Each structure stands twice: as C-alpha cells, then as structure tokens.
Image (cartoon, rainbow, N blue to C red; front, top):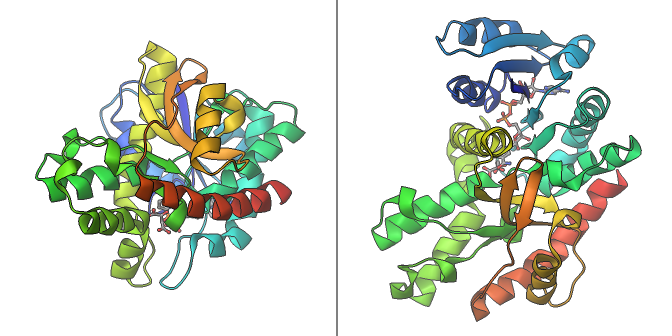
Length: 325
Ligand SMILES: NC(=O)C1=CN([C@@H]2O[C@H](COP(=O)(O)OP(=O)(O)OC[C@H]3O[C@@H](n4cnc5c(N)ncnc54)[C@H](O)[C@@H]3O)[C@@H](O)[C@H]2O)C=CC1
Ligand SMILES: O=C([O-])CC(=O)C(=O)O
C-alpha cells in the first residue's frame, strides 16, 4: 500500500503530475490537496481505470486528512515566475506555503519521503528540513529537492547537439536549481568530446537557463508545467520503486549533505574550492529509506571548475535564507 499525496494538485504542474502518478500500478492511494479545485480534479482522475484510489481535499481544514500516513508527499504548491523574475523572487510567497505544508507533514506523516518542487528549491528544501528538525522527526535521507527537470533538459539539449537519442543521454546535473547554481557535467558524457568549447559553453548556459526559456515563451502565463510534471513523476516514482521493490536507481537530487558519504562531501568541498555547503545536488542511489548512497562528483573539466565556484557563493546565500526563515 503506497499513499502518494500531491500538494498543489490543482495547479499547472499538479494536474499533469497527478495524471502521470495515476498511471502507476505502484501507487494505491493518490491524495490530492490544494486550496482550490481538488474535488473536480480528483473526480476526473478517479474515472481512469487504474487501481489506485483517488481522493480530493481542499483547504487547510482538510490538510490533515490529505496528508495523514502518506508514504510520499510531492509539493508543487505556490506561485510560478513571470518574465523578469528570478526564482528567488518567489521566496516571499512560497516560503510560507512550503513551511505550512511541511509542518502538516511533520505532524501527520513524519516518515514520508518529501519531494519538493516549489521554488526557490535551493531555499525551500532547507525550510522543510528546519520544520522537521523543530518537530524532532528529521531524517535527511527522506527530503529531496526535485532537480530532475534539469537532468531531463540536459539529456534533451545534449542529445540534439551530439545526434543521440535524448533518452540515452545521461548527464549528471549537480549543485542547485537556479541559473548559475545548476551544474551540468558535460565532460562526463560520452559523445561530448567532439563538441567545441563554444558549443559546450552554449549548451551549459541553455541547461542553466532552460527555465527562463519557458517563462519567456509562456509570456506571463507561468513557467514549465508539463515537462516538470514528467520530471516530477519520474522522480517520485523512482522513490516509490526504491522503497517498495528495492530497485536501486541513481537520480541527481538536492539533499542535505548530512545524508551524504564522507567521500561525496569531500568531493563537493574540493570542487567548490573548500567551501562549506550544507545542501547540494549529487547523484543519489535511492533505497528503502530514501538516500541509500551518494556518489562523489568525479572528474570535472577546468571550465566546470569555474562553474562550481560561481555556484557555491549563490547557493550558500539561498540556503542561509531558507534555514533562517
Ligand atoms: N523544481 C522545478 O524544477 C520546478 C519548480 N517549479 C515551481 O513549482 C511551483 C508551482 O508551479 P505551477 O504549478 O506552474 O503553479 P500554479 O500556480 O499553476 O499552481 C500552483 C498551485 O498551488 C496551489 N497552492 C497555493 N497555495 C497553496 C497552499 N497553501 N497549499 C496547497 N496548494 C497551494 C495553487 O492553488 C495552485 O493550484 C512554482 O513555485 C514553480 O516555480 C516549476 C517548474 C519547475
Ligand atoms: O523557471 C522556473 O521558474 C521554473 C523552473 O524551476 C524551471 O523550469 O526549471
């Protein structure tokens, strides 16, 4: 029995994400929470002939029921960007939303795997961690910042460039989830040797600012929703599969380095010029308790080293802001 709760389920990400989760035979109860419209979304999805039960819960009064005993909680609740905004500009509104949802999770589903999509991810993950610490239920292995869209974008853009099927292109993307904190490691991807330095820098920048490309194209109507739903479902279902079936999958995800191995922590220190960073996205092997193992960064190019230094400063500021909130 696996209960997955989506908080923000009526939104641009929430609806297609819930649709993709409804298709999984691994989910037995899909619980949809939002402050609006979840009864309709739940009624609609409940007609799909997969075995999971769908329930809709609307408003703070129904949050406990929505969240209670969840195994996985996915949070795409909050406001998206408009052109000209940074992800950090969303902090003012989204920090409080995420804190309140995390508080309910800490009380009613303290063992749930928390998959945080709401931006700014670099800060919202530390917020969730601090809430869980306050309630004495913190396990850093169970809280994840969902950075899967960066990995999905890297596969797509690199695949286009080197003429490979994007589904076969695996590129680790480390660091955080905003602009220069997004660190795609192209030098580790077979087939990129043939790219010029100019091509490498251009595609790196495109991966780092892929979110802006969508925000600009949507022209005031929000940010990535469909590709995010795809990425979010992939991540959440990998977490479920690792927990239920013991399938070992490696996904890059933004975690508290308290859950990382000494080798992985040392590799972050080395790559960032000996900076102390509390949260970082690393290749994580998922298991029955969440983070089972973390892989070190591995060899990186001189160009990638310069990216790590720039990322570290911004990331540290984002983390401190979230933890202090
Ligand atoms: N991690 C990532 O890679 C990505 C993150 N995002 C972020 O995901 C978030 C959601 O984006 P969209 O779905 O496009 O926004 P949206 O505005 O379409 O949907 C957000 C939903 O959250 C709900 N909501 C607001 N306050 C809530 C509360 N207190 N409790 C529960 N639900 C609440 C709204 O009613 C709405 O249905 C944004 O912060 C966005 O920046 C977006 C794309 C990628
Ligand atoms: O760009 C945004 O604001 C939404 C997001 O995080 C992304 O698409 O990567």
